[in-house]
Amino acid sequence: MKKNNYIKSRIDKAEYEKALELRDAGKFQETFNILEPLLTKYSQNAGLIIIAADMSYELGNIEKAIELFKQTVSLKPKSETASLGLFHSLWKMKRFDEAFEEMKRFMSVSYSQDYVEIVREINRKSDQRGRNENI
Image 1 (cartoon, rainbow, N blue to C red):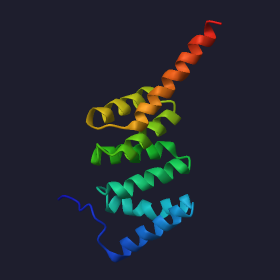
Image 2 (image 1 turned 60 degrees about the vertical axis):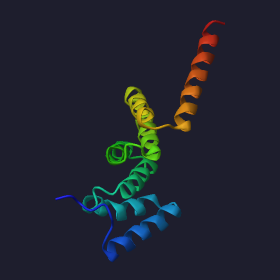
Image 3 (image 1 turned 45 degrees about the vertical axis):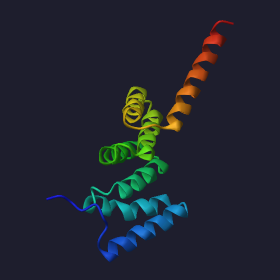
Image 4 (image 1 turned 90 degrees about the vertical axis):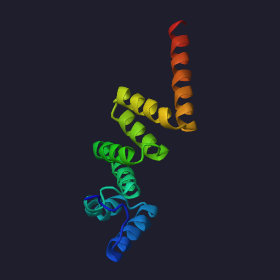
C-alpha cells in the first residue's frame, strides 16, 4: 500500500503549521518535537522530512540530519535544497568523499550554482595552499 504524500487530517495540518511557526521563531527543538511523530505517519512527504532534517542540523544532531536529508534526496532526487543539506551535513562530519559523491550525483541530474561556487572556493583555497607551500 502506497502511503499518501499529503498531510490529510486537520489535527496533523494544524501541528504542521504550528511547527512552521516555531521554526520561523527559531524554536528548533520545539519544531522537531512536533515533526518527529509526523515523520512516521507521512514517511513519503519530502517537505516535512526536509524541515525535520534542517531542524536536526540546527540542533547539532548531524547524523540525524544526514539520515533525513538522504531520505529526502531519495524521494526528490532533483531537490537542490535536500542535496545541499546532505552535502553540508556530510562535510561537517568530515565525510568528504560522501559529500563529493552527493555533489556529483546531483550535478548528474540537475544543476546547482551553489555547487559551482563551492568547487570554485575549494579550488581557490587549494591554489592558495599550494602557493604558500612554495614560499
